[in-house]
Length: 548
Ligand SMILES: [Zn+2]
Image (cartoon, rainbow, N blue to C red; front, top):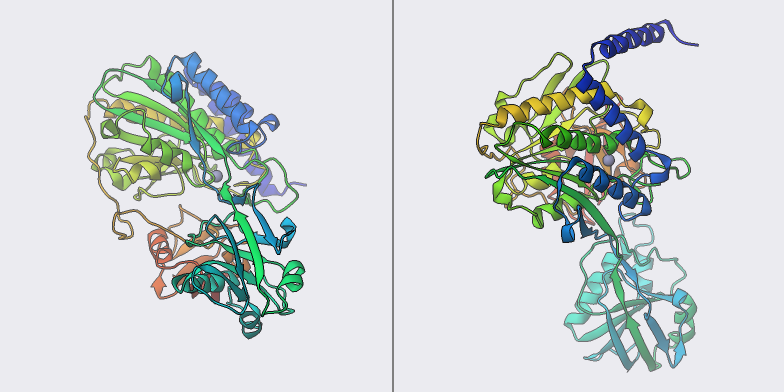
């Protein structure tokens, strides 16, 4: 049963929609139809959530290449195609050929592993658990370490072994053989997802099965031979790039990412049920469809004082890999780029607030001439050039940016982000706004770039080695602090009891007033650091101790 309020609300929506549709001009209707077609296809089941490096991503980039071709864009990818391939670095794995033998016995691969920070390498030699000679493998029994720290919640066995191994190395060890003669079950494994730095010698962990058999007599000399090989997990993403060459000295880049979360294999979905396709209609089939429509509009337009480069990025959801690669392997000189427009989640114009967010406002003085409302929506400007999407890669190359975003919603990063929930007419109105902007800027020449108020971190680039696993609410301005839009399962914030809607006000000694403070605070910590976080949940201030 509907409540009265929602009946009224639905009625209003219905009337609103029909008034709209009556008023749509032919070109507007055409844009809406195109948007519907593109988004329905990209968000459909066969594309399986368009995860970077999968068949779903391939179907998407093949489709985008065909569309770019039909519009008549010039291919600007690799070897005359629209595609620019790039590697995604997502960790390491233990490769074939990794082997250990002790006293001539081949040890089963389930009974040993290289530590995550181990160097690759081969060692053959004789050594004893009780002898520490230069230029030989050294043994390390973690029994004492485990016993002393048995009740220490902040104890990290991995980093303790790493420190010890560095120390051994400095004293002459060629490699370290780690084992555990205690009955405490150690929390350690090869973590392929980790990107921690490696040390310069091999460090191998020999599990109980083998260590109790071969290392129990500490006076014995043992013949050791091992080969450790680890490698990067190969995975490639593909940007799709098309160009309109007007022979102009400057180029405007219009982009949006087309990749999404697949079934959530990369642990970036907020869905906690059994694995399902994350359709990514708003995130970001909507922005991809907008890029295509802008290409159609600009192909035969009279705004020819800029060239236009259209880019559909991949690898965004894994950390802006595609846009970062593009800025480092750009098909046009970056010095000729006038500015970059990024569209990420532009399909859910909020029916109540009718407000969109435009980020990057502070990256050029010219942006102050942009209208802050239209007949159809209000614009809330956000100054920062750094944000959770691909424009960040361009801003960091000193290029003015604008980031269009209709705001977050409860379907964000969930399988329920589907095409039927898109406001196609709302998105068409955003396209009109951008078209007006392009028209206006046609005679403006090259825009001046400004650095925005960002955490002061040397080269202007924030480098985080730690994360709380929260998705910040970039549109939050109602109060003091960083509002959490969502928490990633299994990460620090979730474990510490934080949830969507909570507001972080302090990390360690650092007060958090806004997202800039938050980023600045995080940059002061590294993995293994312990600190406290103060946050507000249900109007109550809470303090939790965490370890990065
Ligand atoms: Zn996303």
